[in-house]
Image 1 (cartoon, helix red, strand yellow):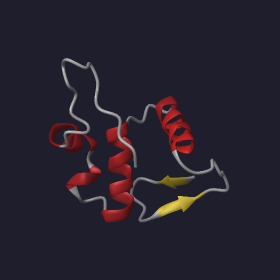
Image 2 (cartoon, rainbow, N blue to C red):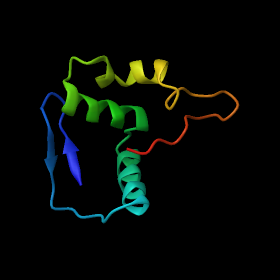
Image 3 (cartoon, rainbow, N blue to C red):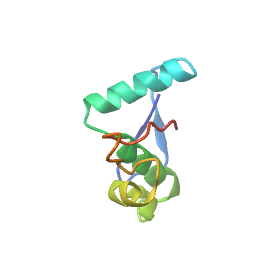
Length: 84
């Protein structure tokens, strides 16, 4: 598992090994959910760490407004699941 730290460049690797594939992704999603980090915020943090914090992609509100993966659909009551 890797961590993104707001304002820092790159990711910080941890010693936590969740394995590979969908099971690991579900665990990371659950951890982020427990911290109040939704999919758009997670994606924005990753973009900020890798592309720079001044990128509009590092703004979760920009993603929620412009990226169809994060736009809340009235008929579904939530955004579509996103895998990173």
